[in-house]
Image (cartoon, rainbow, N blue to C red; front, side):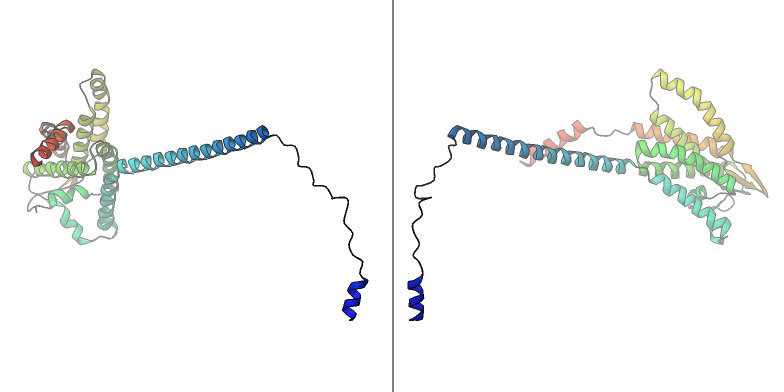
Length: 276
């Protein structure tokens, strides 16, 4: 009863006259709405297009940089540094640690072993002998590796060094002991010159002008040491023979016929036709 009395005592809400009529809508023309929507859509398309172009451009730049890095890594000379490290390591083991087995790598003309014709090209008598030879090995070996690759560099170094030791063993007395890399130095020098040289008169003039200076410096610094008795002598036979062997290698390689790209594609096409 108390609740019912309370409800009866509350005044009833009167109808409001302020909002008795419906609110009028704002007068926005339809062409304006279409114009604003089309501008927004165009703005959105431009933004998406710019983002896509930016992503494509950034991806293209990244791909170009990656291809450039791969190309540089492929052309980066590594073989020459391994040759230098091998020469320095053998010198340290021979003269600093004084490992007796290194002496067996020298070329003893009285009773040579087959491997000594190669291993003696990595041995040196003293620091001046090592530093002068490695300077020219680095210069000419890097040129050969940049033109022909690491495998060609190693083969050129070994064949010219071993060939010059073989000729020295045939010519010099049996009491001699040969060691040094200057046979390989002169071989790499000849190969680097002949590989880059063409029959252009400018190249020939350049070789004639600079060739005498380079040969004189190489003859002064790059020494192939021959121990005769208890004295150290310069082995000029190794210098000359290394240069001649390097020239012979270039001549023989140029005489080998290599298939061109057109011939290889034609042969592959013929094989496909035969299989079909």
